[in-house]
Image (cartoon, rainbow, N blue to C red; front, side, top):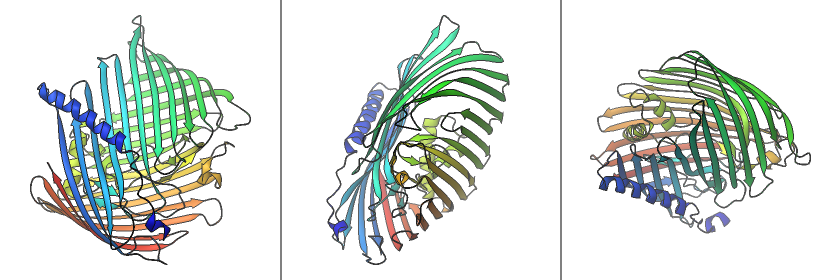
Length: 518
């Protein structure tokens, strides 16, 4: 009964989200007054009503409930001028009927921006996000309700945490006597987790790159990097390196690069202080056509070598992608980069239709809305952690687009391994290796110009190297969507989930979503 009387969580990330919306809206309105154009503000409000037969995700104590959600939101896009970017934010107010479970607020934010302070000299890149993440890889897992504007985690899952991230990267570009270009870049990052100090961190660092101007077939470069991550609940970690390298560009299709230098870090041992060693690596990039790209890299490190391999091919109505990478992550573990969602897949697919990434963002979101597909399904699995760990990511994904039908599929694997004796907190304190696998298949069919159906099947598996550490979540979701006008959309759906783990459960739900755009 304790979960049902839990006080309403404090909307910790709301001020940040509203501030970003206000800044973007102010910039957009300023340009409109000046007649600049090139952007749009799209307010909306969504209303959702759902029924579940297992709100508490516990077969031993099922609690059927009706869930009402009101989601005001805004999408802001700006693709010209000194400030370019996109922002999508919604504030989800969730209320529970026929149960004593308390109401709650959830924020959802995706924002990317670039400000050109001094033309071609001083720029600032920024990214921000707010979403739901698992606190532990072995706790209860739950499938989100897929809505036309995103996903809401409305079930009583104590394993979910709202996580916000902010990254700001200023860049100063200049030249050295007309012989070389100089790029000075700073990196500032903040990660905050609502209701938990585990996963909170601040990061700072910078890099300098000096590269030859008027480069021909062969060119040189020098690079230095430093980065420090300071968790609230653990020791900080620092890494720095200095390398020199050569680029070999024999033709427009091929690019080779080699580098060598020295690096210093404290990943392996807190008691032993920092370790210094040699580093070196090579990179190859092959782009035989504008639709095909193959990239590979390998780098030597004292704490374990890293690598990356990616293949991407776009055809007229499909996109295929494979990636395999291994690197060090500091803090929250999970998949980083790559194709993780419907949005990512169709963002690649529409690259030939709209090269500009800002304009393509609007195109992709409008298309997913018309198909009744959630932009952020299926979200990457992960868990809260502190300390350095080595992450191996493998993924195969594709999207097929027909005249009236679409199919997307993703198979991924993430292996997180504890690195050194830095006293990791979270799941890596009791497991030296955590293997997470995800499978998803989604199909949609356009019934009429204004309506369609979609079906999504997914499975997520987590395996630890300690005894009895294994979970599995299988979900099946079906949706029907339609437009009731140029600015009103409706969605009806049903969901079935089965979870196997410490507290097994099965859950069935039905829901209806109505979204009004202004």
